[in-house]
Image (cartoon, rainbow, N blue to C red; front, top):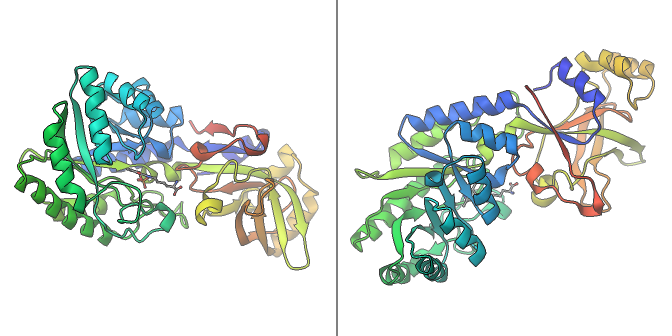
Length: 408
Ligand code: LLP
């Protein structure tokens, strides 16, 4: 991801910023597109993972659909050319305004999360003399074995409709004349790395689609959601998720009936490895018990470590042997070059708590990170930050909006 030309360019730039490697993004999208096409599966990009305009444009150019969770995401999908016939609108709390916007845009499908929501969409569609396509988001009670903050498919979660409520759902569907039932939708969580979990999901989907067919509802669309994980520990060795094996599980275990379509909503696996958060060391604080690297980026730029205890690989780009000489060419805020080269030859590694500048104790990217001895001005990369990174940035402490740079 970072060759010496890239680092030289970084040296000229104000930090912090997100750096997007468009080549990695392209390779990832190609891999996903090829693997899904093999089985005729449809992939909607879960825009919540990253709605950076350049990212959206590239994803759209591969022909993926869009999975949106707000009216503004629906708007962005339309503006970026995703195509209304490939746009779905999900979310547990769609406002009337957002539903109306999606009705006006004639999107492909609403993924509906409660009986009351079904009735509201029906009323709003009736007022416009339209019919809304709906898929029922069902909570399959399958444990995703991921962090509890990003698990969604258990009965205790707020998402979806529990199976014991399905009688009410078919009752509502029968009485809502401005709704067209399209199929069933599931999403059990995010950053799922154990593919066995998806096998369990397939088994539940098969049971539930049979239930609907037994109740005389033709299930045209099976939407398995997203959630495929990425390798946060080895972003270079393992840059692309195993799309082949992922789709194969569904091919092998889902009972796909003639004329049925299988849909997915992948977010993280498409974009996570394509970006890093690049920051500079502002201060090195050497304590009795701890050394701190205080960066100019914090939870306002990337909140995942603070919110989910998420691991992201942290690298000191300036202290990589191949980049040490670059430092003297471009200067920056670094300390004496001589000390750098002494440490380089001695290969000194220290443990640092890598923290941000925000006035919160939780503003720590990671504790006890082993890094080469680091200095004020060193460039630090927080890897695998393309999903739920830039889009979850905030203006807390009245911070500047984080900048973005792109590879060619
Ligand atoms: N479909 C639905 C209904 C979803 O709720 C989500 C993500 C996706 C698809 C896409 O999931 P993915 O393929 O990206 O795992 N901010 C958290 C992740 C929240 C995921 C929310 N839903 C994080 O940074 O880990």
